[in-house]
Image (cartoon, rainbow, N blue to C red; front, side, top):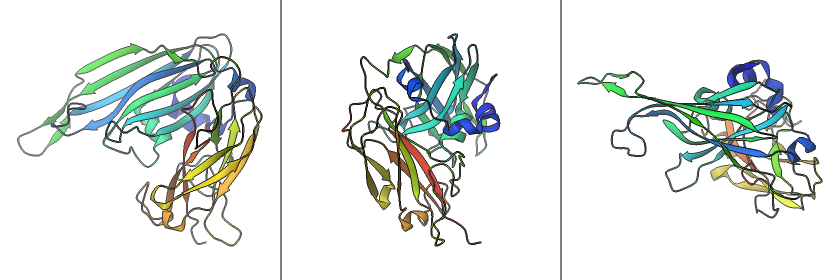
Length: 310
């Protein structure tokens, strides 16, 4: 299997989008790779963060070990928002690679799996973060092209003006020395729907009385030691935050959590611009009470679609 993520994950491997690593696999994670990614169009000639043009990135990932590896892939944004404010951390996927297998993560994969309603700005800047159970061969390819304009109002894409290939070394060992817990949210549903249909992903089933669905998740300890009691949070942005207590979790143990979604969130026009979809974040250990082996995987993005009348 040598393919791109949108072909493998979206077309053939949908079940593994919500596949959990075993406690043993999670505790054996050795390496983390952080590859720069820039995706989209920067149309403003006065913007000096990136010059006016079109930018594309693709990160190639090869399993160089002689055993199967489990990978957690996320994107940590630096733009948006406007620096120096930190951006959000967006889950992309969890997958497995057999020895010698490779996948590629490109801008279209990042948009399809991390931003199903479209990129949050004309372009994004940040890092593709890959946590693995062993060593990987990771290379990134970057291309850029100018935006061409005539004397009036026509704009078109010029020829490729720049191409660069970078080898990405391991950034850190997420597990660290000794035994430590690692808390993160996961979807309790086997199916993932990018629109957040009830009963999929982080969106619960329709309530028995026909009301809107709840936001649901499971807090799982993927570390190799027990995690003390903590607090998880569902963040609905301007419509409030709801916190849920999480008991002590042994390695591999998980705790289901759920909350009601504020009714105003469905009518906000957030996310995809429609009035019946509510986007939200699920955050494990929101108060940073647990000393974890990996602190960058505590947030997941969910969407929930209001049930439509039958």
